[in-house]
Image (cartoon, rainbow, N blue to C red; front, side, top):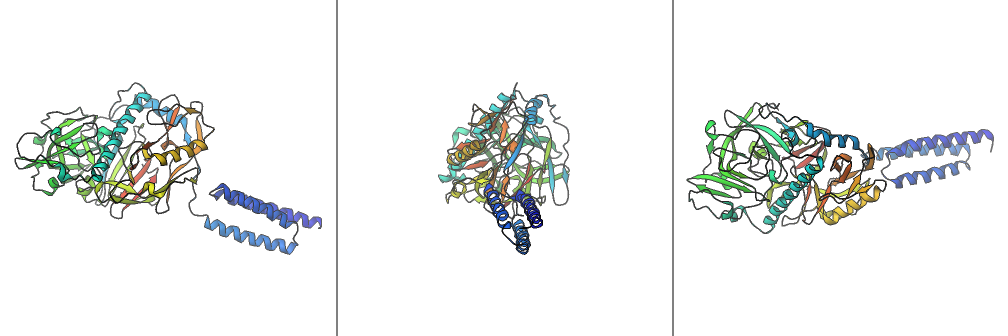
Length: 535
């Protein structure tokens, strides 16, 4: 072969090499990378034995083939790694003890127009001064509340599976006139602030004229309620106790109303409806079930059914009550006839704020997941999940692990009140083992509370880790940022893998994995949208 031809061949081979190296940036797996390397080696060998005409023909075919392949890979590819800003996370664990809590009487900014409503959403740490002296004790307290929360959710599902209904629980409607007691009947166990949902607060006005109060956001509850005077037994809250006699729009509900009949547990006294909601740790709220005006910013909403609690016990901490955002008929979105609602949960260690929106459009870049409902319990929002991946590699998890059975057992719900995502034990073990196998370069540390996989990152400022992703039944993927699954548990640099196993068939997507993402519930079309960085 002539020297000139050799130069041309080398140039062509070099050009092909550069082209292919640029193109492989979009490969979704190491197998594809190896395949193209083998193809390149074959191409170079083949070029040395070809005539010039054949060389140019080969290059032409290679260009078109690569262009065609590039088009097919233009679909979103799996995110393999994420970067955790260790230094920033540790800094937040110390800053929260210096936060100035927001004034309980300051008016929060709210936005509304003819079709949508929005109100400000705050983390607990920005409203209630922590009583803990260090971040480790704060973490243990949070995890303890979270465990109780999960027990309450799974217990309610167990009631449904056993066939227990609200009617079965109404065993006390004697009209005797005395306040009913928790020990008089077996009440359903539902989600609540005492179980950990008290991490995020919104400020709303109750009554006319409106009395501004902080209420806990909870997608795992339907009944909204506030503490009311006269207070037979009330816990300490940030705002003054709501005084019904000061409101011109306060109205008791009769026992014959649809709202009263929709309660899981109710009693009729002197023709008026009483309610009770009991929680997994023995906390409870009970009192009059009424209609009242609820004000969001400058928008007043009349005849909203809620509980006026005169007897409230538990660890609700600061909030005046609870705003139920579940899927039942008594939930706040249902009473608004909202077609959608969304929230964005800021970092729980941040004093910044976000918004809770009603009837707002779903962001166009949202990752869409199917939304399912339990035919036996309409409170919870179930996700259509098929599996999980670590570092771009799908785990061998049976799809049935995330499916709901005919009796309403199993499945995976998305919950604003549960902090740590719970997975069936076999699923969790697969996820944890895959993550540990992919991070041999991280120094392990002793487990903390419900976390069995922790790392000592005290010597690092940033670290690259394999991305954990959820995969949905419509083929979409939700990659999580590293800070949503490696969280600090102290201020010394100990980080833990923020998933936990559960013996229940029910899995829960918790708020640690939702932080920094706008979660939009399209109630009309039955889907959930996840939009990162839309707070």
